[in-house]
Image 1 (cartoon, one colour):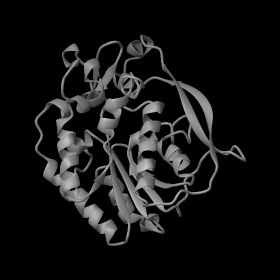
Image 2 (spheres, rainbow, N blue to C red):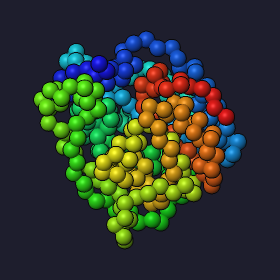
Image 3 (cartoon, rainbow, N blue to C red):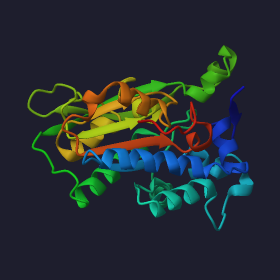
Image 4 (spheres, rainbow, N blue to C red):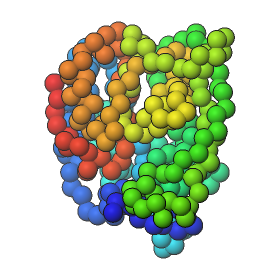
Amino acid sequence: MHGLVGRDGWFFYKPDVRFLIEPWTGCDDVVAAVRAFHDALAARGIRLLVVPAPGKPSVYPDKITARAAGLDEPVYSHARETIARMRQAGVEVVDLFTLFDQNRATTALYLQQDTHWSPDGMSLAAREVAAQLLARNWVAKGAVDYAFQPVPIQRHGDVLRMARSPRIEKGFPPEQMQCAQVVHKDTGEPYKDDLDSDVLVLGDSFLRIYELDEPGSAGFTAHLARELAKPVASIINDGGASTLVRQELNRKPQFLRNKKVVVWEFVERDLRFGTEGWQVVP
């Protein structure tokens, strides 16, 4: 079983917790792969912005155990070290860990039954990434007028479903959430990617949730597009943001056409547990 039962009805994905609490010394491979990708993009005149997505235990360790409540220091030491090393290597990184730490008291950033961020946590991350892209003048703001359309949904979380027990699922009602679907203001049509955008987003299921899942066009890429006032392009692979998305990009070079920026998201645990590890991909 990959799920752990936390406190107050919270569930956690076991690899997330393992990454947080177990020793790990694989930072060199990660930094080498990220730096190689940075340099390969730079050779084409393309900027790279790396966005590690915090695992839920890093933001809510007190929901795993009461012993984590009131800690003086955050517990995400592996991620902090890796971010520092990437920055030392000349790679630009968005620190969502500090941002989420600053907002966790006022915003529900993650789903209780799920590995993923909540609609509010996702939206906060998208706004921060857009703000950093615009502040660096890496891209210009577009002229597409997007609006939000509220869409309520309910779902059982993936950690709860990992138990593969109808009895357990029946013991917990599905989580209710309010999504903000991105639509064109003039037509009401839901947001769609554009392959010819100057921004390419690579990532994993943290990008898939709400965007490719129900309700659609309400996830990270749609919210990023709204903040930038223009569509983006994306390659999304569940669990494969460490290497598989770069391999797919290698097979589909048309995705780099007209690009100025690549935004590369991957969940924190993939620093150690990413599918295919951290290969250097041409």
